[in-house]
Structure formats: structure tokens, C-alpha cells
Image 1 (cartoon, rainbow over the protein chains, first blue to last red):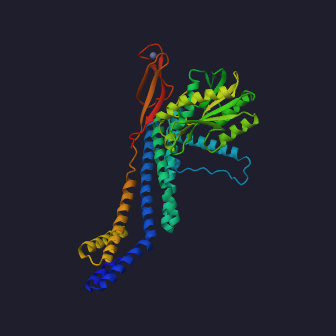
Image 2 (cartoon, chains in turn red, orange):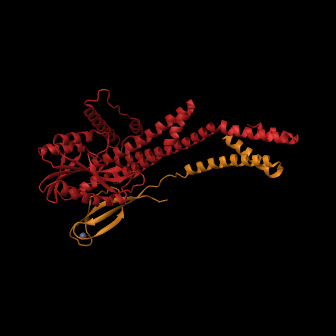
Length: 375
Length: 114
Ligand SMILES: [Zn+2]
């Protein structure tokens, strides 16, 4: 490439040859552009990824520092929690074999139960002074930190792999996904901050609406971490349920709905589920819409239980969802989402007036993480 | 990196040739094309770099809570305090002195909207 310059200087020395050398110079330049174009592009992508990776490293460092600080403040550990925290950061879960999928849901369920129990016990060990609600918040915090650590490890893996194999396809895919990954990482950092302080997140709109229904009613606990209270709405008997707050918790609403239906001998005229749902770009946050089916995220075990029980008893399941972005779902609840709570209550009222008779029993389930929301 | 430096050098070289040496219209046009392409490419790359650096560290959200009274219409918005949660009772209402205040809602606002 550098030969271009002396060639042209020579051209200038020899007068007429100048024009020829200029053309040669241009040709070389064009070759440089087209021949090395892909290389140039790849180099640029690599820089992009490298920068993204560095930012990811910073973000995961911040989340980890925050976790450590909160664990020390709330948990008052007797020894340095760092080594145990590092072990937690690297933990994994091996999903069941799905070659023979029959019965896989209960396997998953069992696996998740064990995972959660062990996780909470591990967190309890590094934070012995935390009360149950704080322990739940800390578990959520460690989990957010874990997610950031995992994202970083995966991206670094593919970056180094792409660099090592010089594979433009790995690099291009990584570069194309990077903006989405960065957005998610920043959302997780926001989530970590909310979990550290115990603030309600956007995903908590379901439990929030349920807690409005439960206000000042007598409450009891069914199944694991789920609180139930009875109230009346438009002359119908409403059984409202949510995960037990105010610690960060999603509970097991599938089990709770199943046992509530069984308790009532299958005489439930409908189940209404309230949840936050991912909006499409361009839609407004806090918009409420309704549909049919079990509105609950996660790996699918809870949804399976609800669908199974509803089908067995021929109970219609309706969903009322509040639209929000992934960022809004795991960072402190935005005002427009909080205000959507009233709209959700109105929707539930019109839904039960249209779809049930006075005196019917209706289950209203507030789905989501109840962090910062009591009952 | 080296590629970019070379491109800048080539671009400037072409530019200098264009301004000082001149020559036939064809060679002038060629120099012009080369200079614009080379310098334009480098400038474009630099802009990309700047844009990704603009993704500055997001500041934490500001979080507020809505405090209401169970009896009267008292309503107050205050800053979130550690340990607070929705439905938590906060002691007697200062306005009617009969019922307890409680936290009706907690919401966050993004630090700065661009
Ligand atoms: Zn009052």
C-alpha cells in the first residue's frame, strides 16, 4: 500500500509518465478499498464489539460491587463473602433431557425448586442477618448480577472465538446483536439497583393490582409464597392472589391456582390473570390490553399447571396485560405503568360483568415479581 | 489502525496534489474522488466510534412514593426511603388524625430524557 506514494513521486519526476502513474495510483487505491473492504469492515466490527465488551465488563463490575456492598450492609457476614459470591456467579443449571418430552414439566419444576432452595440457602449463608424479605431481595440481586456476568462471559467467548478463527460470520452476528445485548445489560444493571433498594419494578404491576384488591381483607397463605384474600366485586366472589411481598418473589401461582380450583371443587367460573407483557417498539408503555390464555412468563411450568387445571375443569382463562419494554419491566416502575393499575381494575370489572353471573367465584391472579409491594 | 493512518495519508496526498499540482481535468477529478473517498471513510468511522461512546453510564432512577390517608383525601409525594414498600403503614395522618397513612404506590423516573 505504501508503494503508492513513491510511484506517484516518480511519475512527477518523469513528466509524461505522471498521468499513467496517477491512474495506477487510483487503481491501487480502488483495489485497496474493494480488496480490503471486507477486512476493513471486519476490523471495524471488532472494534465495536471490543468497546461493547469493555462496557459490559464495567457494568458487570458495577453490579457485582453493588451486590457485595448490599450483602455486607444487610447480611452482616462474619467472613468475606467474595469467594462464595464468585461461586454463585458461575453456577449453572442443567436442563432435563427433552428427547422423550413426556413428564418434562414436573422434572423442570423439581429442578427449579431445588435451584431456588439452594440459591436462597447460599445467599442466606453469605447474608446471615437478612430477614426473609431482604433475603428474597438479595437473591434477586445476586441473580441480576449473575445474569450480567453470564452475558459478559458469552459475548467474550464469541468475540475471542471470532478473533481466533478470523470468522467474519461470527463477528457479524455478534456485532448485529450487540445493541440489543447492551440494552439488556443496562436493564439488568437498573434491575440490580432496584433489587438492592427493594423498589417495585415494572413487572410488579400484576401483584400491585392484586394487592389493591386484597387491601384490608383477611389474608392467608396457600402453597409456596402465595398470598390469597377474598373480596367482592360487582356481586361476584373474587379470590385474589399474589406472591408474598414485599420481598422480591414471584411465588408459584400455578400451584396456587390449582389448589384454589380444587378447594372450590372446580366451581370457578373464570380465572383472570394480570401480568406485564413486552410491548412492541412504537407502542405506548402502560397500555392495557386483554386476551385469552394463561398470562405468565418464565420457563413454562407454571403456565402448564394453569392450562392443565383450567382444561380439566373447563374454566376459561382470561389475561389482562400491561405493555412495557424489557427495560421498564425490570427497572423501578414507571408512573404510566403505576397509573395503568386503575385501568386494569376497570377492565377486570367489565370482564367479569360480561363473562360471569352474580354470585360466581372468580380467581384474579396478579402475576409478576412483587418486590417492594406488600399486601 | 494502520489502515486508517494510511488512508488519511493517501487522502491528504491526493488533496495536496489536487490543490497544488493540478494537471489535466481527468487527473484532477481522480484526485478529487480519491481524496473524498479516503477522508470520508475515515470521518465516517470516527463518527461511529463517537456514537458508541455516547452510550454513557446510565444514572440511577429517581424514585418517589405516593402516600395517602385511609380516611381523608390527604395525598403526598415524597422520596423513596430504604425499607419502604407499597401498602406499608406510616403512622397517623397529620390532617385528620384519625387514620393511618399508607404507601399507595411507588414509581421511578428516568434520570434524564434525551
Ligand atoms: Zn387523613
